[in-house]
Each structure stands twice: as structure tokens, then as C-alpha cells.
Length: 210
Image (cartoon, rainbow, N blue to C red; front, side):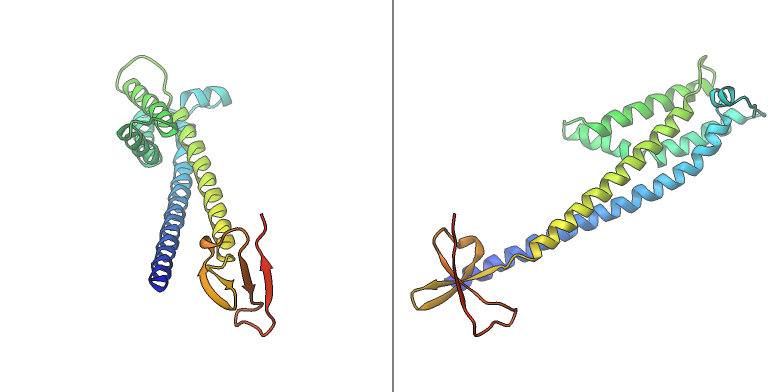
């Protein structure tokens, strides 16, 4: 029975480590995704800023030609759907789970800016806010990229710490040494500590204290 219990616990530990590995791998994929989207979005943001009337007014230059607003619309559309996709998909997931959060807030902000500015391009009176849309997406992508890197770094550090912990302990019961799971130890148990992976003739007894 004890052997079966150990086998079951060993299998559970392997399953837990496998899930942890998948979790870290998923976050690493997200890091690469945010990184790629950020760099591409930055490149697209440059012409959006140059073609935005308010930016031209602030910096005292003029770039205007036939169809410039439509080009601005196309660039902003690409940025909205490509750079903003993580937030738009996050919006649907949060609403589906009935737990709106940061993704919902960001998605609503970029959607309002995109829809309103698009309407202005096609005849509605008002100002274009494509440059706000672009810079907001860039900042949010950068922030989530940094956040994911921090999460993975912390997960890797915890994983390395967990690898230092032994799975089994050598419990001394009278004249007999029994191998049990570390989780089964309790206060007052006496365990045998073997220095070195292969064991040693030197045996050290240690009592677990509270």
C-alpha cells in the first residue's frame, strides 16, 4: 500500500511539474507575441503621428496630400486590429467570464477612439484621434510585455527553488529507516540526512522542531 501511495504521489508531482512547465511556456509565447506586436505597432505609429493634424500643429509642420486621411485611416485600422487584438480578445474573455477588468477598459478606449475617428474621416465633423489610439496601444503593449517578462522570471525562480526541495525523507522508526514523502512528516519525527546524492557512511540524525 505504501509503495502504491508513493507511486501515486510521484505521478502527481510529475503532473504538477508538467503543468507548471506548460504554464511558463505559455507565458513565454505571450512575451514573444507582445514583443512582436509592440515593435510592428511602433513602426506603424510613426506615419500615423506624421499624418495626424494635431501633431503637425504642435510641431509646426504640414504634411497633407490627396487621400492622406484615408491612408491615416488604413494605418490606424491595421494598428487597431493587429496591435489592439490582445485587448479586444481580452475584452470578450472578460465579458464572457462576467469579470470586466483592465483589458475591458483598454479595449473600450481604443474602440471609441477608432470608431469616432473613422467616422470623422468619412464625413462626421470632429477631430481625428488616431494618434491617441496608436500611442495608447503602444504603451499598453509595452506594459504587458514587461509584465509577462516579470511573471516568467518569478516563475522560473520559484521553479528553481522547488527543485532544491527533496521529494522523500528517510524517517527513522526505531531501528528501521522508512522512505516517505516529505509532506507526510510531522513535528517530532526523526529523519536520516545523507550528505551527497549517492549517500554516505556518515549518518546524521535530525529532529524536526516547530
